[in-house]
Amino acid sequence: MPELPEVETVRRGLAPWLEGARILSVDLRRPDLRFPLPAGFRDRIEGATVRTLSRRAKYMLATLSTGETMIMHLGMTGRFVVEAGDGVTAPGDFYDDSPRLAAHDHLVLTLATSDGRPARLVYNDVRRFGFIDLCSDAALAGNPHLASLGAEPLDDAFDAAALARLFEGRTTTLKAALLDQRLVAGLGNIYVCEALHRAGLSPRRKAGSLVTRAGAPRAGLERLAGEIRAVLGEAIAAGGSTLRDYVAPDGARGGFQQRFLAYDREGEPCRREGCAGLIRRFVQNGRSTFHCAACQR
DNA sequence: CGAATGACCTGTGAGC
DNA sequence: TGCTCACAGGTCATTC
Image (cartoon, rainbow, N blue to C red; front, top):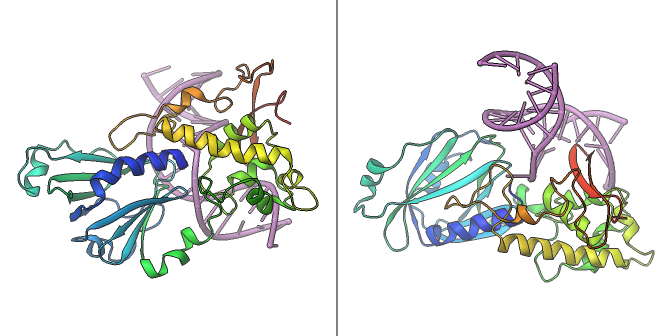
């Protein structure tokens, strides 16, 4: 489900609640997500205060007062829902007026927010492809989930020259290369299709073909680097994209799906100025690729 | 080593 | 109405 813009939207929605909040209690309703929760999970976070909530690629990172960081990945269908306990004077009262938990609510954290109000954070994940890990801050960089992540596309260092170093000599397709989190971290199926369409590049083209023998980026790679950053920025501004499941922590749906140029538009006219092509779908590495054969080369 | 494939899990919509 | 199949935003293990 969530790619970088959706994860960033979730992070922004959760940060005001989580940062400075104390974790009062932990209700593990289904401890086997994609992976089992780490040993002693409840004891290791109960009573802790959340210092900061940040993002790396599609991961959210909550640094705790205990010297550990909680690493959260939403998989395909993971979502966090946060509910305020307005008008409730004690955290224990909070549940009395709360709606019942829904199917696939796997984890419930009861919080005292930074201003002392009770709140409840629920992690729901239908397909259970998401997961949560805990890692000491000292070992964080070496955490298996984070250690092999590639370039962060919204970092200042991400540009055509950086992409050229990553793509040089690659025989795989642009589609597969951009989906490979070890090269560029944070893109998923939607935004890869959108960035390639915007850049006018065929998803079938070899990644290495956009790099000169001297290792310099060709013109298409310059466009691609710019369009990746642009599409991600616009999608974050729109609150992400909602196909079916995704909602922000306050329940809001994303808005960027209305601006897709390629993704999920099979058979519809290409939206590029002056292009008379149709958007086609085909399967690439087991995933649907949407593109316009007329203007993506 | 790089590249490609299947597995994990549940729900939904299309077609019969 | 009910069944079967294809498909869904991600990552990881295995195979060539």
